[in-house]
Image (cartoon, rainbow, N blue to C red; front, side):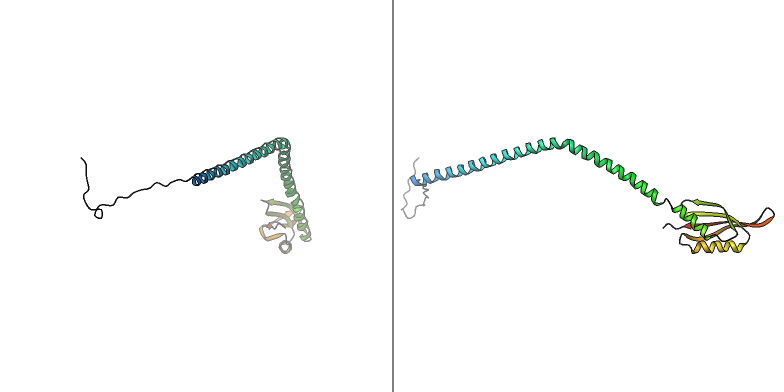
Length: 187
């Protein structure tokens, strides 16, 4: 069936006409030149990147060779570092021992300097490193009190406590046997 539009031209539906762009010779030429430049830039960037990758691979290979050449020296350095740590540890132990080397000698020296006349010590015993027990004999409680006061005045001893004071005899002489306890103050 054939349709015929009998309406006047003004009343007819207008149809759109789409025109395809016409390509002139210069537009084609410009398009080709842009494509050539575009692909040329891409090719140049790819070439530069390939060259750069090659240089980096050479540097990596050179670094691997240097690392392999230095590996024995690095192993020796690690071994020496470990030995140095062991020696330093041993020296630290020796230094700690040497630091407290004269401590007990100083404690005994202080006790002997503070000891009043007619007072004799029978036992000086260290208990746990920070306490000391002093046992001895004398003729009077006053001498024990003098010893306690002398020790308390010293910087080396803390509070001195009397734990035992009892009467006894030695070769028909009346004596007092005593035991003192005190904290030792480290210097």
